[in-house]
Image (tube, rainbow, N blue to C red):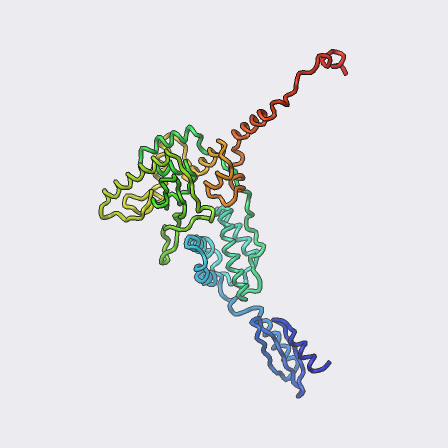
Length: 401
């Protein structure tokens, strides 16, 4: 083989590969291509020394110095660099999960000693706390993303969380309507006697999420066309390293939607408008203008904790069992579907990304629609009803056959 062919063969070697070649003066030259693409070489007196140097360089490539970091040190640095790429509300969720769940258990583990069984044990322990399966899946997504970035940055040679036994995502649970229509009427008649009445009324009529209601502004209401444009949400965000509640974009792209409302809902909103003006007068200089439809007594966004307590008191006054405020969304969806409103329309009103989400959650509550469908099919094919059998078919001799 010529010298030129030897050199061309060496050039075709990939990253993390090396070669040893004798030189004309009797020494040995070792070559290696690093993961960065840079080629290095060194001449040695013996082939053994050249091989030892080559193995050392290849070993250093497999175990880079950065891998001696602890997982906690790496994760905090990763979050600081990664946080600028995600929504403020998501940043807040990440920070809570990292500090509340991940760091207490995995902070001191050396990065290059992580392997799948570490995470299997970790997720098992989380279930014992207990932490819900949905939350554990979220924790796993953060861990996997962080470690995959470590692989992409050549800090790790593989992702140690691959194949970890995080809980599998279950099918959407079917939602049962917690209150019937008579109980809803009772709730509304009771709650309209106190300040949170209009927000409960709108939640039951439209199925809007709590964050969407808290962030609703008067500019979002088209009085002439009787429409509400939902274009923001109230969520936790990070500001100056602290968690605060502030306006954010809607939960998903489909959550940015326009809902048509009826005359009675317009009347309730007009009533709420007068109540807000009264609050302004009472607050005087303390009022902070945010243009909110449902503000606090000084114009700021409502406190979730205070509102939850008020809602619980209202249920108790009405003699109804305790439900979550979010259950009003389920009630609205169930009532609309059970009264024949098309699935696509309900899905749009709720802001679901796919109609299949609505169907999977509420499809079992179509009993009234099924009865209507059965009656409709009877009416369509009424001419096909069976006629009476001729008398000869009913004779004793024919019945014995």
